[in-house]
Amino acid sequence: MNKLITFAAAFVVTLAASILFSGASMAAPPDFNGGVNNEYTYEEYVFVSGAPVKFSGKMTVSERETATQRTETYRYMLTSIMNPKDKLTRNVSFVTDINEQSEKGQTTSQTSVKSYSEKITIGAETYTLDDYQLSQGTIADNRPASDYYSGNVAGRKTYKLKSNDSLVTIHFSGKNVGYENFWGAAETQIIDYEIKSAAGTFFVTSKVSDSKTKFLQYEPHDPALSSFTGGYARISEQSMIGEYAYTLPGSSIEKTVHVGQEMVPLIERLIVPKFRDLNGHWSKENIEQLYALGVFDDSSSFFSPGTQMNRYPFIVGVMKAADIRVLEQPKKQKTPRTAIFADLDPQEKDYLYIESAYAKGISKGVSATQFKPNSALTRAEAVAILVRALGLEHRAPDPGYHTGYVDDSSIPKWAKDSAYVATEIGLVYGDLNNRFNPTKTMTRAEASALTIRFLHFLEKDLKQNYRDDMLFFQ
Image: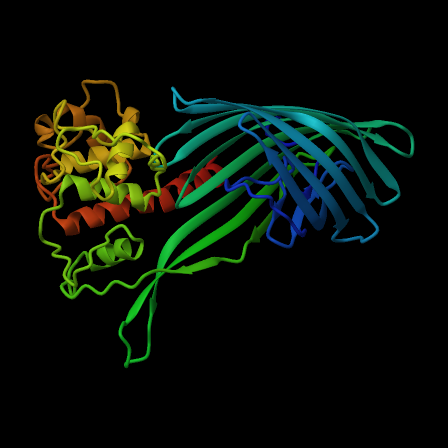
């Protein structure tokens, strides 16, 4: 067990506490102690005494943020699960300096301890935090449909014992990885601790993850005499899970303890689709989900799933489905907005989605002056748009690779990286003859299915990779 990871409190794991959030939308475990919480309860384990002691109680978080700095303050009032006389009180503030480099699409940050106080009573002994040093550096890659980030932390906590003024020193280091998008967010922290006291030296590793997920759930409408038969709800869930693995002084046997909490889900009912030409269609569920989300705003009762999907509505749909930020129209613009391509109209509904997609590198024109908004969407174009939105096009191998499709040579050079990555992450597959068919035009039904797979990647696949793979397979 190594001695690294990102924690900074009095070596603890807690299991019950109430929490106040002042707004952060990212998923992130509280503080650096391996603890977890829901709206009411916080819990963590503390190892400062040389054995695991579970504490729970109340935790509050307050936050102040400017464009260049964020201050987070955590306050804890905890009680031991086994002995109500054992107490933990902790107040710690962290200050983070933020450096947004918009030209590179990245943000770096540096976190340190601003102030601290902590006192832990276990049995007849009281441990008072005498010194706390911490440094954490984080890099975030801000892509159109999702942000991805990674950080490293190192620190030292020194506690003084009331009984004899001896010291307990905890050296820790670790890492955190995470992502954030409209459909989900997760952060996993892995921290290794080396705890030194008069009784000897032992090690603890904490793994904890906070994850948020949104998904669609069909809700039938049971009365027979009704104008609709059912509709979708968007469910937002959040949960934290954690594990402490440790070996006590004088022992070589590794043991583990676990913590976990869940928030109450948020339920949002969505508009009800009423298309009359989808019964029995293979893509009915995909189409109705996108309509419920407002991606399609067709006023007709007929969707025409077999007709071709055009470039303009597909790009707009991707932007809406992933809730990608769109440029704003100036309120007092004196001169008319100039179109980015000669065949686009700035007065057209949803035009700003197209301009935003172009500005973010998601979509491109077919020439220097033409966008061809009403041209049929090809598989190569659709895949390139989605992979660029995810920011993963550069994850393809060095040039000269083969995609694995029998028609690899037919894939345009500009789409080859996207075709490779989309296949690797499960967005697309070849046909029965293992052809990619880059120039094949997509129907509205096929484009809907591909968009839903894109949303599932944002919702499920990233969570699997950033939470489950990190917690259970590292």
